[in-house]
Length: 111
Image 1 (cartoon, helix red, strand yellow):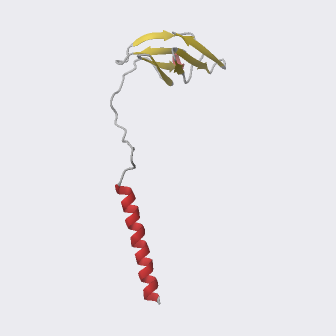
Image 2 (cartoon, rainbow, N blue to C red):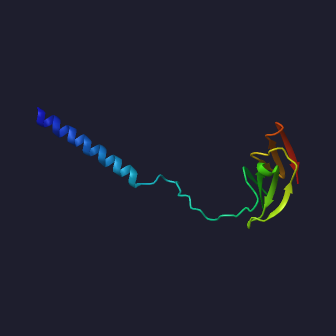
Image 3 (cartoon, rainbow, N blue to C red):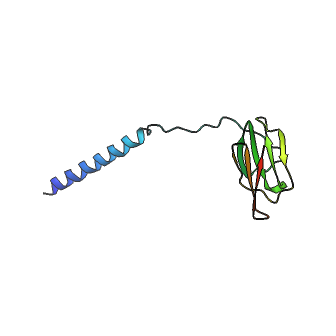
């Protein structure tokens, strides 16, 4: 009786180990591995949030009370200044939404 119990326990342990190893060896269909493809230097900009509008990447810079648009090289090409601690921004159909932490308001800019 103890031999059968030991054999059954070992068999179940081996089966569990094989299942675990098999699940680790395969990647799920459609999964991808993220690879860093680009780094943009942002001299003088301390980004908190970002949004894409057209060909520009807009960044909220709460430390300097502004949002800035940068190109692919990190050069500032546009800005909206005199804000009150802008945070996470959103863009949609030519509109840029800017929440201001300092005044509890949300501003809408259109291009």
